[in-house]
Length: 293
Image (cartoon, rainbow, N blue to C red):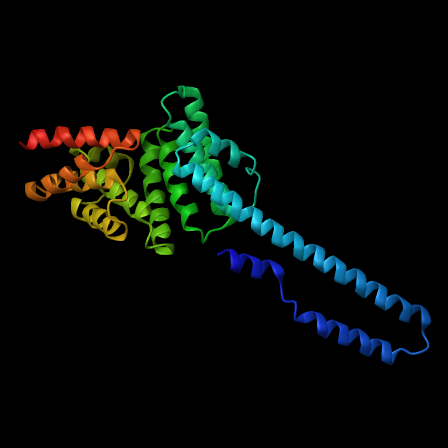
């Protein structure tokens, strides 16, 4: 990755000899014009120096960019949410989608911390969506931009009412599918799309009726479709996420397959609880296993 960035930044240096030959040809063809002859080497030298200044600047930027992204990813892996947010906030006006979607994720993660009050949570939620939106505008081929746009759009729907939230559901699925098309090996996108399917598969009948009143054809899905995405996520990256194990168990419960539900709920229960979410997953898995006897 770094070598590719440096190669891209340094440009094609083989063009310089050709430029020098072109200058020499001009000099040979323009004898007797002293001022012009004196000017060409000077301008060529200035251009050559300017080229190297630009070249060096591009290499430095490429190195700094890689280091900053590595630092951001390290802070994310350590769950240093506040530090990560403050680091990336310096790049909120960046044109780089890689900085922006990470800032969207950090803003959202900060909004979910238990010590954040309601007003600040709402502010961060909408802030995260704006960063995700900007990231997508900067690079439509960035799978992570599509993924975090979908996630953040779902979050803002919580503040905008049922009609808007259901209407956004179509857009959310569209962007998750784009994220998966761009990167079929991203287990998180597969999991979220599975969760989307699960949510609509288990929608109570009365909520379906409400949705049908608002929309001629409201979003629908099945447990089978949800299961397919959860299993694909597990195939791509086994045991990557405690909640994917839990959702596999819950999906099999919805499909009345008790044996497989027990298998996946047990895996969710035994998953090492490193985060608050892992602990919540553990508790829910234990409760469901008790109900199953």
